[in-house]
Length: 229
Image (cartoon, rainbow, N blue to C red; front, side):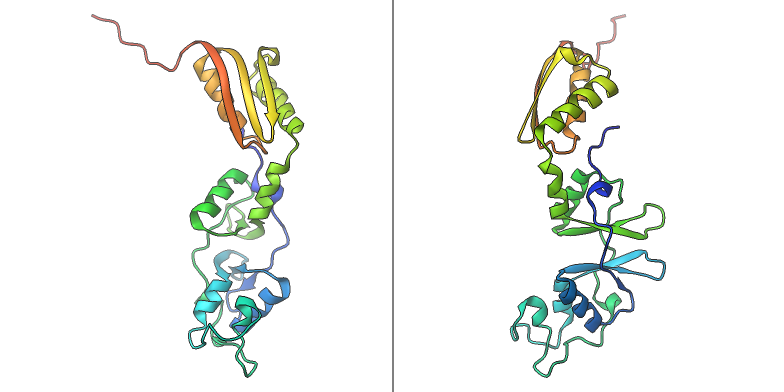
């Protein structure tokens, strides 16, 4: 099965995370120090059990007037006397759970859809069996997939998909790639072959759109009518 670029190829392996018992003040300090807006919460076995964003911290600061103070969202968490609001809370009180996660094998396209559906900017990457944290992938990491040169895309479509995977003589088809848009033209034996090819190309890393100009000799996707008795 052709799935294109996976999360494991673009994710970041160095992750800032907090333990489930981390205090409010420690979480805020970590976000300010590393200039991040969210982080995973892990248990003693390094399994992801939740996610904390700066919005969670602001909502957790119930006793503080969020309109006061400066220094951005996290700066508002400081009181005038130098203390943090909500300082009695720990990570499990503040986190959103369960966390939305992906694995290294998840296709980058699917990770982008997950981010869009959940309106989030990053995803913890976990081991499929244990749930242990192995990395993080952000929107900018996924966008890097689309910086792939057109000639690399065309070469993968021609050699890896058409010739090797589908075993179709490349001379029968014309493939162009411009700005991530791949155009396929030529004649194949059956409609299912054309559909399978277009679907496979859509999963190639860097492909944004597939324009299908393929023709075929017979339509093998239409069910034949049973013979009359």
